[in-house]
Amino acid sequence: MSYPRTPFIGQLDSFFCPNDDDISAIQTLISEPRARLVQINMDITKTMTVLKDLEKQRRSLRRYIFSHESLLAPIRRLPPYLLQEIFLACLPTEHNAVFDISAAPLLFGTVCRYWRKLSHETPLLWSSFFASGDPRSGYYPRHNLNPLRQNSSLNFNANAPSFGEMLDRWFSRAGSSPIRISYKERHVRRAWAAEAGDALMTSDDQHGFNATMLRAILNIRSRIESLDVWSGGGNTILLESLLSQQPESMPALKHARFVCDTAVAVGSGPAAAQGLQVGVFEKSVILQNLNLKSICLVGPGNPLEIPLPWSHLSVLRLVCKPLRHSSPALLGGLDLSGAHQILARCPRLICCDIAITQGGDLTRACRVALLSLEELFLGSMMEQRILSFIVQSLEVEPLLHLLDMPKLRAFGVGASTAHEICPRSLLLPGEQVTEFNTSFISLSSILEALREVPQTTTLRLIAHDGDVFSGWGPSYATFFQNTESEQLVPRLRHLYIEVKASSLEAARTGIVPLLSSSRTLQTITLRFPTEDTTPDSIKDELLELGNSHSIRIEFVYPPPEAPTTTPEDLLRLLEHFRNLQQPIDLVYQEEE
Image (cartoon, rainbow, N blue to C red; front, side, top):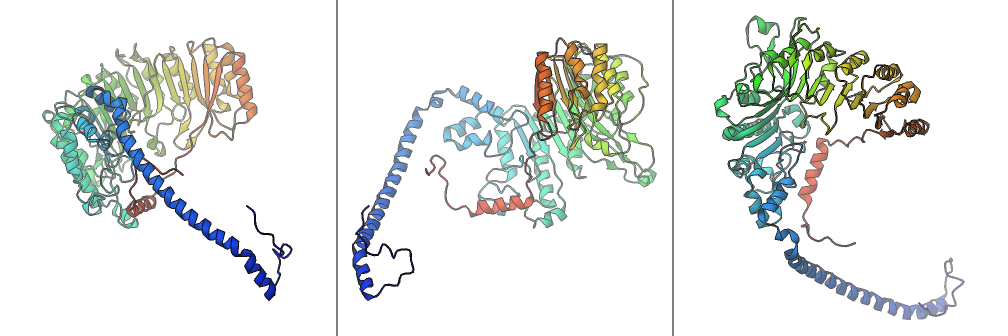
């Protein structure tokens, strides 16, 4: 752009002070540029007005085109039964369906009237339900409700139905289908709620939530096929109410899981004075249901006294801690002899997870035939390790020696996952898996156990105990030497080891003899505590050894820790939602 020639070129960007003649000359010089600037500003304003009008037309045209193009979408041509199959494939696989508007099945009702109607007419979409009473949990019910409490005065939608009404609608859509329910109870102390400004859930709210869930469960108990309940915080009212149900009232029940962290104190008498407790499972009525095929019980008590249909069970998970008692003697729990006795009661087992929570040698000598057993896991709860009576090393070989398990495909020793939402399975297609957590079993016991499972094709040596990474160190170097010299795992194809960062020399891990002698080994996976502590020289050494023996070496590291969400974070998020006034266009977003 050209400008008038200025005689003040040397005075620009200086502290020049013009006289009257200079001022007059400058005014004359910039008069025309000023007029052009005004005109340009007017042109920009007009252009912006035209641009905004064009953007408005573009949005309108996009909506018009999209609304008609959507009629051409291939999914519209799918028959209803295929669309229903797609709906069912969207359900979560690791747990039951959750009460969340952003997840299946509630999500389908937000697409269009047809999808909402079709989803409501698909009973299997509504035949499972999972909820947590913890407002901070991702499984806490969220559907037109304040995600932090049930008080109707805080609903985003003042006309939204209550949670109990929504539950009734949910289960009514299931029709006559068998129902699977999972509920994680949470007891929230008043002190904690007061610290959060009473903006989260108080104890009264929690009792109301539990009552709503209990009422919903009892209303449909005759149709419940699977029931999982986690009870915590010392409150066993809901759990005891369910355990007291008569088997005739729940004829469809095939799977039951009850997780409880609290025993019941003896009410009076000398036993009460001694601090004696009794487990919540021993006097259960519903657990006597002969239709039960799968049982999982986690909590204090004596499993040998629990009235279960032992001979009918195909899946059994038992993690029973000893009961607290003022005397040195420990009551309840399970030792190796008790585990042997329980296995003898269950000839039809396919999957078994039993925690050994009491010390003591195996005193039984009779053999037990478990002709259908495919997976056996022996271990203990992580929490047990902080107590003085924890079994420091599980001697499982004597028990294994007495078990006939021709179909066994997976065996493990370590920390039980029976209390988790989705208990971990060791089974792998086409593999014979054996896993040991060295925090629970000694190396000599591992060698003894391997002698009982020589068909092992996948061996996993775990050393990660909660937040403590004990690792596979130089003291274990002789393990592989013994394994190789005795040919304990002649069919081994895959080896997984957790290794200490302080002992990474390949020669010190004892892997070299195994690499040299094995003719079946295909992969070795080494898990390190952090990537930063793994020297490249060690990686190169192991990779070179693997390449020379045609074995693939893999290095894995723990995933980064997820950020924690505090109650204050939730309150800030709630305030943010309340302040949102501008509606969001879910179909189109403004282009930058």
